[in-house]
Length: 398
Length: 92
Image (cartoon, rainbow over all chains, first blue to last red; front, top):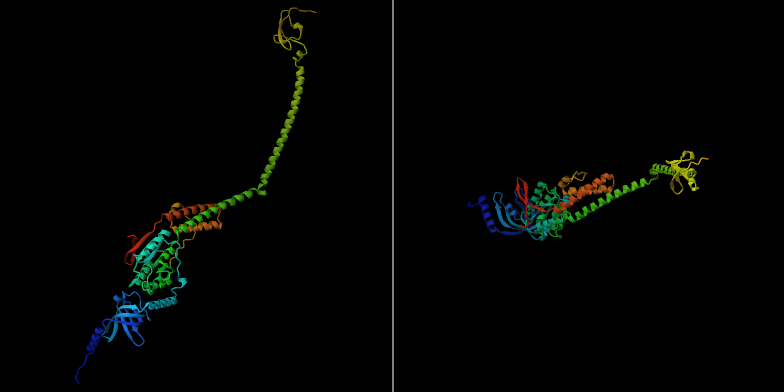
């Protein structure tokens, strides 16, 4: 027997050459099973169909181009090359490109992840954190370019400009997007100095939005201590992020409306507060005024005053009586004086002049006897109407 | 999540203190004053004091709202896991 043989190494090398040269660029359709993501970042899984299976590996540098995380049961189209692992004598597919067979595969993946996370309680309302009523700083996780951040800034500037927006720029679609978004969420949680976070992107295809359907994003949202609003795509787009977040906004613009109050509403509120306070205080004051008035008009309150008033009335009465008495006595006195005057006037020496008598004066003294005069004396004679001078000429001795 | 329980009664002594208050605290205090007044359980003197404080707060609230201008910052770098933000102009 010709000792014609291969060593194991030689044979394996031969097999390797044949396989690697024949299948250096193949595209294969299969269903993923035994999917594992190694901590090194490489993906290991099996592709299978009803009758066969093949091991597959996707190295970390290739994984960076994946826009989705493969899952067991997902039908995929994998492109790559066959490589032989000589030490173990095994062969595998080195996957360079992987995509879901169709949109249906993503929908299935979405439903499965949703089911899984729901079962774990990640969507449970009791984990939903309340949003701050008046946020001061709002973290935004989105693309720094494009309309979304501008729309949000414009709306918040109009509604409630007292806030500060902190933008954490991320790519929002394609390879690595989910990791960046998840990282931004955890970084904001380390930073702490924000009151609420919005993670968002504009509308797009299911593939475009896929990062927001990744488990890594869902877990980052769930683990966030800062309340999160998820606003992805259009109103009709629902993502896993939306379910885990504390609040889902139908669009990024809607998130901006939800995250802050409207300044005009607040002004209205403040005006109402001022009105209510004014009403309240003036009501309060008039209440006390009314109370004081009713106290003042109260009978018992007025009892002492009434006594005073009564006394005052009595005093007035006394006063009137006294005045009356005085007046009466004065009148009596007046009459008395009048009588007296009459009586006195009848005694007036000059009243005799009225009756035709005359009075003789000498040196202003009344001369009541003739002997007091001598011949030649100058005398005055007072008549009723006039005073005349005269000289005594004769001493008429009788 | 850390809870800010700031809605306990706090009093504000003068206007200077008022100005340094955050909008939220101003507004909440004003809200509180209105509810105390509506409850009607304070004396007339107190209610007038509260009213004066409330009017001051309302003024500050209005001023804060009318003076405000939105600030936008963007992540500039990470140093040892700490993130730093810088001013960001969207019109650039």
